[in-house]
Amino acid sequence: MLEIKNVKKTFHKGTVNEKPALQGVDLTLQDGDFVTIIGGNGAGKSTTLNMIAGVYPIDEGKILLNGKNITHMPEHKRAIYLGRVFQDPMKGTAGDMEIQENLALALRRGENRGLRWGITKKEQKQYQEALKTLDLGLENRISSKVGLLSGGQRQALTLLMATLKKPELLLLDEHTAALDPKTASKVLEITERIITQNNLTAMMVTHNMKDAIRLGNRLIMMHEGRVIYEVSGEEKKQLKVSDLLEKFEQVSGGEFANDRMMLA
Image (cartoon, rainbow, N blue to C red; front, side, top):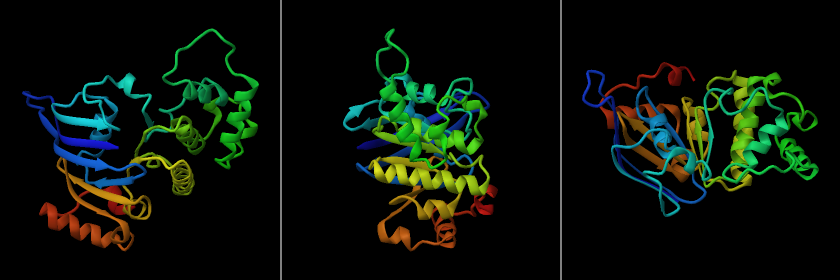
């Protein structure tokens, strides 16, 4: 359902700040795959997600989503197919708007906007039912401003907004990294439940190797803008963090250097 073919990207090309970010990424996802992505600093993890979302144009290669060539499609036109959750809990929601207004924006994504009444009673019920699944009590606060919520509540709401219309592909870019361990664990639990219940195809960048092993059915490791290792199925379930570190040293020829990942 997703094909990334020989995608290359260099930032600030031709200047003293030239930085190769992706050096020929090849990746294919099947419908329903949940792929976790790990790698050191500057490995190209977030850049890969940004290329899929159309944040930056690619230099070479192709990106196909369910048979559609989206390589040169602008970011706003891809938004109808994709759900995204960022590392910063403040990024995916409008703090000055109510919870129900944020959800209404998510539900109307990609649709023509008219002059009809903003939120119907039927929609309010729909939002309350959806919020119940988060198990955070937000279904009783739909008229509260989002800015009053905690970081974890906002991130859970962002996740709900990103999946309200069942996107063809869900992109999660270290979406629990800014949360405390207990809140991060709760948001990951909600993430796994939403993906499983809706049979979503998802890619999740994480700095936590244990989470990368535990979640999803596939794991890929990136280094210097390339996919250097991939594992799935039973083999993935049997992995330990030490196995990943050893594999990284084998395929990259160097030690794993990412403090956040090592500490996690």
